[in-house]
Length: 483
Image (cartoon, rainbow, N blue to C red; front, side):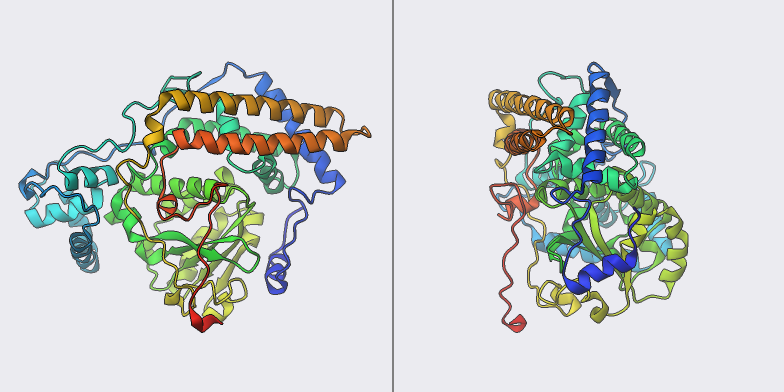
């Protein structure tokens, strides 16, 4: 059943979430649909045990190599912060942005191989194109291996050009504390049409294989653009009124013509993937999009379509509310272009706010950032990788052991699920449901252990904000003004 915006808003006004149609709160009909979908999924996997999906990734494109030798050799240093240099270059970059389109086009031309930019221009180009790995190598004066050089998907399937269909499925399904959390999203997004839900899952598996999302998670922030990470475009800052993790997005900091498009798309997907893991026990997250200072430069239509596609297809039904804080008349024209791409369920979860008071319907003032006149002092920011933080990823022996344990737990959950749906109408169904939930807990533990060897650390982990259960734990608000 399609949700309504009125019912979503009412949840926030009363601070009482509607848990119907969610794991742990399914009615008999919804549980039957879930059982039916699982049966179709496992039949599909049984019929495709040897299926290999081709990798054809656009997200893993490498930024073109540039020669910055004329800028001189950097003095090697163990201090990787370099805040002064970064802040100065950022100010220079934004001065160029503020000069208008001609300067932006100039910067694009300067990035091409045919141009001969000046030293100052090259500093700006390096700021925009440098990856985290590039920056650390430059600062240290030599290559620092933050990750193993040779990536392979798994010990059973080492091909870099294909992905095993079954592995792709279980990798994403086990990224949540219970696989039902991921599976049920597609039932909700398809209005509980099992055939449509199955087709959506199949499409997502093909996309994840083609774009090599496993490798993107392996590389993490190491091969992302440092500029995107340091700008702080988006980060989790707290919780909304229903307790869902709250992502704050500063739209004005998006300037795609000062960023490479494929690199920014990779950044967006990496953000979604990170959220999947650090909010693994949550069914949904909320997003506050701050459009203050908005211009059409910040949101190119093709990029918005890509973002909407992620929210509608690849990461369907993962949001509780999307609050758009808007102070510009330009946004109305922009919205008229965008709204046609949305599905009914996502549209119902998008609300507009012209004032902070209207935002407070969905986010308490204690959770709002100080720049929006809230009391939340927390600023995660981006923290550079530490030299040895991914040391487990270099241990092939322990990685193989962790993979074997994960496969054993996958087999246990698979078996428990088959027993559950085969005995769905029997008196002993509750017994099999309990065994299945127990198997899900063991699978969750095995997946988190395997993740130490297959996913690079992220900034939240570096800041000590991820607990032993793999979930984000933000510090309590200590601002005395909120009490």
